Image 1 (cartoon, rainbow, N blue to C red):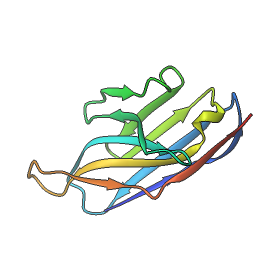
Image 2 (image 1 turned 180 degrees about the vertical axis):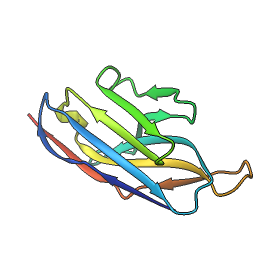
Image 3 (image 1 turned 90 degrees about the horizontal axis):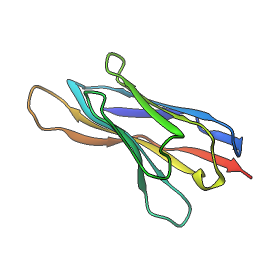
Image 4 (image 1 turned 60 degrees about the horizontal axis):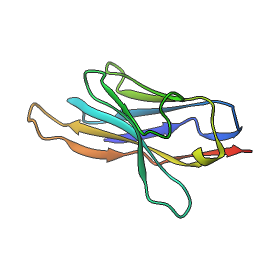
Length: 120
């Protein structure tokens, strides 16, 4: 199983970016999907999560600015980031809990990370 993230880049404060992540390989079903980020010198933190039913959860720091969505048919998860701030600068990682078969066991997989830089 692979998760391929894309969409990072350099943007000015107040701007927007859209991150995308596609899962491929041996996939029976995907449970939760999410985006995490890690800024220089800081621990990785959860940004947004979405479960298989579409219920979302956001970090307080991004509520009202970021929107997570998923396409279960395409095994993708997107993160629309609006009103970006310099403190949003980080490497963003997608994450998914993937079931390989009809068993209830799922396995966490990570994408390779995509850099988002917000200039002031």
